[in-house]
Length: 409
Image 1 (tube, rainbow, N blue to C red):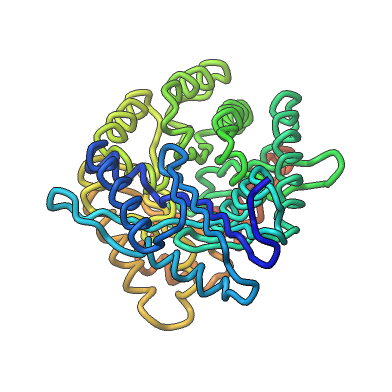
Image 2 (cartoon, rainbow, N blue to C red):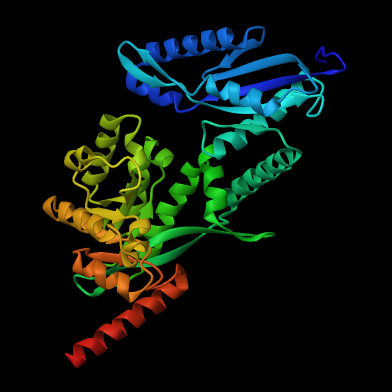
């Protein structure tokens, strides 16, 4: 039981430094240790009588006691946040000390240390999910969400064990060749009780828990198995998450999937995002070159929205750049979207890379993309994601259309 006078409040703050791993990876562990010491000393200087404890790694706990019932807790939280919204210079290098904060207050959120720390941790989870560098007070609904999250994790594990996922596919069409080129494999989860659960709901949890690696392995194997039944040279594109990319056995998984399915390596395209370059560029490039040696194609997804750097394109010869749909949406609204698309396609052509625009929904967008030199498109203009059975029907339909066009010509 925490010692607290009846007319006073007590605040427990759970602190997690944002992107601390980046500091360790880029400046070294001694610099990370210096950052932690600096943060702790600064908190003691600013907060005075508050108890500050490092819990381990990049996490701290702060205990503020004897707060009057009239205390402006939001203003106090702002003051705490200000302690972290600063940069620190370590050996001539600038490091960011921003943090996410979860806050629980006694007696409203609990009267013992275990309950308050648990509730502060729940609030911290929400703060990090909301975009980091912010704070969140505990709310009763957070405990309900935590129970829901734990149940979903259990259900995810069961789905992995029992084969509870399925793949849907969205076509990729070549404007240059005027034909179907590939399908992107998209995971779906038909939950036995809750119906179809959106990937936007379960993929972040899978990433957080590490289950994404097992799920990703299944997707690679199943996508190759399905694509092996498609005619001609139709390829399948598979998204590789950052955690799955860092898995030491990714190349083995890909090689096994190709061997088991009989799919030629040239018909498998792996899509990665620019975020894989954040931590260790050299290791990332080694992994990419290892995958390239297998004969598969490598695409850079969501190009232009994240950590875009020309050095990445110079360091590794991607086969394709996927232009994010946010640029496509703006094509018919004026502005500089056309110029951005033109710049990307010109750059890609100079480097020998293909371009594909995502999120194409109408003929007007497709025509502009064609004029600006974009080679491929993907989006609702062609089709929404469809199940494996419908893929064969779609292929037949596209072949019939192509045959009619040839006869007319």
